[in-house]
Length: 216
Image (cartoon, rainbow, N blue to C red; front, side, top):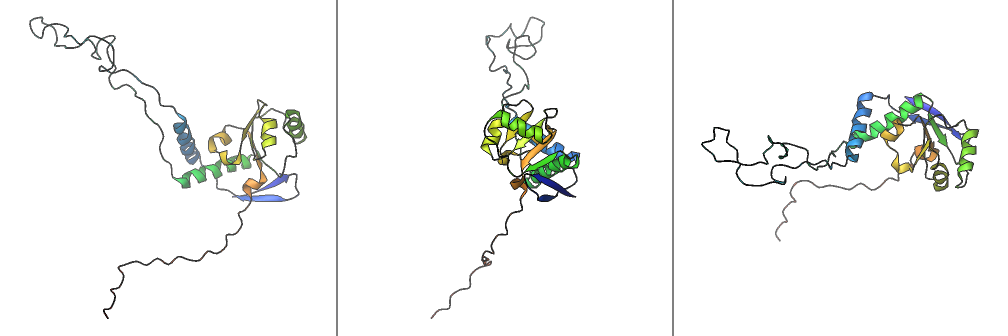
C-alpha cells in the first residue's frame, strides 16, 4: 500500500510503499527482539553442586528401606534440583528479510492510524521547554506516548527528560519500540529515497578448469 505523508517544516510530501501489516510477522520479530534481551542468568544447583555430605546414608542392605547413597539426591529436601534452568543464551537468528519486513509493517501500522509524523528539521536547542513548545504547536500534549527518532542530538536531548517521550537515533529504530508507543515522530531524511548508485564494472567470473597451455 502507498501512504502519503506531509513533512512538518516543509511543503513537500513523502510517499511510502509499505506492506499490509500482519500480526504473525510482527509477533515473530518482537519475540526475536525480546529473546535477545533476556539475560539468561537463572541457575539452580544440581546434586553435584549443592552443599552436603558425601557419606552413604545407611547400609545398602538389612534396613528394609530403599537403596540410597546421598543426601543430595533430588528427592530429598535440601538436595539438588533435577533438570533445573542453567545460564544460557536465549538468542536465535532471524532472517534479515523477515526483520526488514517486520519494520516496514510496524511503520505501516502506525501510518494507517495517522500516527506517523515526519519532520524536516526541529530547529530547537537542547532545552526541554523548547521541545514542549514545539510539541504543543504540532498537537502533542503528552496524552499519548511518543517515540522520537532523529539524528538531531539537540532534539533528543531536549525531549529525553519528558516522561511521555522516548528518544532513539535513526539507526536504533526497531519494531518493538514502534509498537509500544502510540505515535512515531521521525526525521524525513530517514525515508528519503537512496541515490542511484553509479554503474560499477561487472566482474567476470570464470568457472571450470583453466585450459592447459600448449607446449612449444
